[in-house]
Length: 409
Length: 166
Image 1: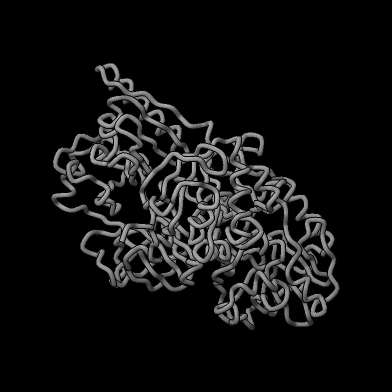
Image 2: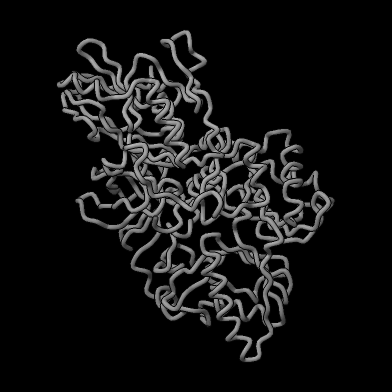
């Protein structure tokens, strides 16, 4: 398996089975058995609702429920979806120096964030490449809340811990708490806000995209961020794990069945439609945020001052331009998938696809990948190789489906 | 079709084939314990293709069990008419939202017809894997190959064993 690609879930299954592997009783490669996989607080709830459970980043997670991935993806944008993302890792950094500490590790202007505001950022390594992407929120000047990818949990925590030790040994005041006592749920779509409003007294119309609040939802103290991974308006809700099932039930009931439990299969289709990176596919250790099209996430002050790992590489790319860029593609024929080669019209290789699939909302193939700078303009005609055959495609801007983030007018 | 069944034993909530609702159009069928439909009168390959042999024409497709594990099909790649297919060799591919799978021919022969409806409606493979979702019609070059394939009862048992192994 390479990266954390959703396409490889249970599907390392194989595109090319050896002929000899077709006998029913022949020895097989297999994943960690059910007993080795971690379970979220909603595991039994998923199974009771018809969830098809698969291994993902060491967890047993629902890839879909009774409805098809296509129907589920469309329903999110028409009504809404509730995702269990408790496999992701939430943590808090605290202390007088938590802001300057985090700034040594990420590209965001953390100091410049207003309290109760957050942003997508990237943890960088010494070469300016991405260790992980993360949504960070400044709760107060002495408390930062952040969420990192499940597949990068061990790597990220080790990285943060190592740098925290060094920072503290120089007298810095920072400590952390990993929120394993909480579960993260994502509620996305047009019905997200109206449904959630039934469960809290706080006026959600005053909570805009990127903002954060600690408040009572359905009787328990939750961390609420108006953010998500679908391009729709919505929220990520960190709830004490012992209340997670009750909250999920309450959300589904208040929506009268319109908001559906939605699995990782649809989640991947939605984020692809929204043009969002999947770490492990579209972003990796050797790809910088500039190459990934995330220059907007590098704070202005940070671009002048640096002060994060790999700043020299990144600042140079900001000056000279990166040599490769992430772009979107439409294509005909079979959906372009990760690692498919991208050629120009004359058959010269100019790049590679990093994620792709069929878009249920647009009903066409969409993909994202990297091409050589200079070849990256929208409209550029390309050929994408799928199973050795070239298919027509063109570069297009992202998001593929317009986003609906809740912003002040 | 070279598709590995990844469903864990708890996730084996395979639904009854939707084609079962059109049972008045189908030949008699037996419902396997794993709840995908398996039809009488067809032969089956361990790679989850079916063959219907009618005199000098053999029709080939993928089984209900296969389409259920694959998920909704979004694209099908099929060979040209007059091309040759060989037993256990790849003749095309099926793309679903979550996976790509090769399709292997259960028998050898010459392709005499291709189901062009699948270009615009690849979902027929999900809704009607044994009828409207047929893929190719072949003139068999070696009818003895049909004897090496499984019958419905054997195939049903094969599916159960394969799913249980996960």
